[in-house]
Image 1 (cartoon, rainbow, N blue to C red):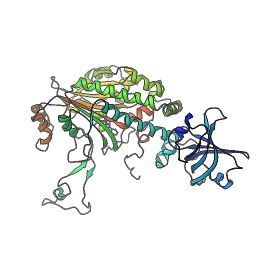
Image 2: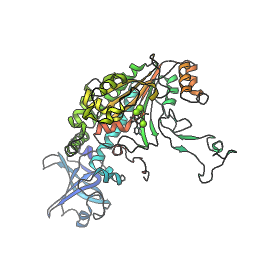
Image 3: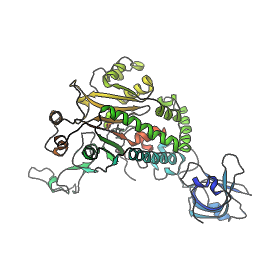
Image 4: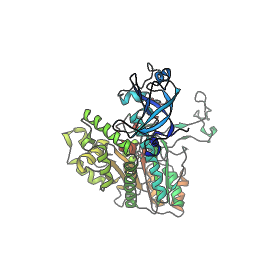
Length: 480
Ligand code: ATP
Ligand code: MG
Ligand code: MG
Ligand code: MG
């Protein structure tokens, strides 16, 4: 008989039926009359209890059913005797698919630290925590596509390799086919990229936005959802060198339409997780509680994970301008911290994540959409406001995270755009393709970028971005 997933075996559909289950042994408890094996196959956080009678199952086989082994069990699904679970599997046959030496298996049934598990990222998917995180991550990714599809947006695949660095959004990773020990040189002795594959210098993309804009100026409503790469030097809990970004771009949208869409979208995907991942979220909720009770400093701890998610879905985000936020920060210096104060002394400085989190967690106690930032700290393509000082930018700030979304209305006026590019030393000839969309049939448009891992971080309540992507890329970490 064919394999049935444990998720389905735990519904009533299979009661009293003969089935096969396959999975990894979490634990085994034995006495001389019976063995209980907790089996997990990744389909759900729940383990399935296998009941093995030593009169029926060979002793040698039973011995090998230890933590970490992969097994196939045939048997009948019966109503459970014990409390908690409704069904269990009475084994009529067990086959060992893959043994695991209990002396050497790194994932013994005990609590492991996240730091330790990060070092064995190839095995950590077998733990409850990471199983839950990656199932929730999957559901969120699905919800992203569903949301945009239902709204009539088209999914555009923007290039991974590009000659533009979008906006100087971050340090880039170079792409070349050259043997770096012996690259061809030009007359001046510089590396001659004209002889390289693309006949120019290229790098991995830091954002799909500019290409996304091109697509929106014809398809109207598009989004990208792809990997982006930034050689971030900062070893923070919010930055990866390789992360996934969701970037919708909409023609005929102004700044407010953009804010409305971003808020609606975030609420939708978070609510989708609440409606479809409750088993995993309840586990993560409990996990976060345990974690926070040991690290009482965590500022998110005012609400539990589930309450926090529901709160975000149910409440309107606070909207205010950068200038208003600076006033609040100036008047509220918590703990009289010098550094905090210093960073906001002068109008024009970029907010640090401690400022962002202060606004969200302490002042408003809800997500915040900050708008109209000083143009000096934002990219060239953001639409210039009439005051001559600010641009129609928005950042969305979330509790525990700080910036989760960055976006803006784009500058659609050719003269304003070229003038800003010149001011910022961005070569307009090289970006003729971008400027063409303003030359021919320009229209107001807007968009934003959501770092997918920051969303997963928020929804799972995990504390470090390395723990919400299967194989994180951070400084010094690219082995597998
Ligand atoms: P930050 O201020 O946190 O460094 P940013 O302003 O540099 O972010 P943007 O260029 O605005 O980031 O990118 C859009 C979104 O992508 C951010 O709001 C954030 O959610 C996400 N993001 C940016 N850099 C990273 C990174 N290194 N790792 C993970 N997510 C990131
Ligand atoms: Mg950054
Ligand atoms: Mg930022
Ligand atoms: Mg930003």
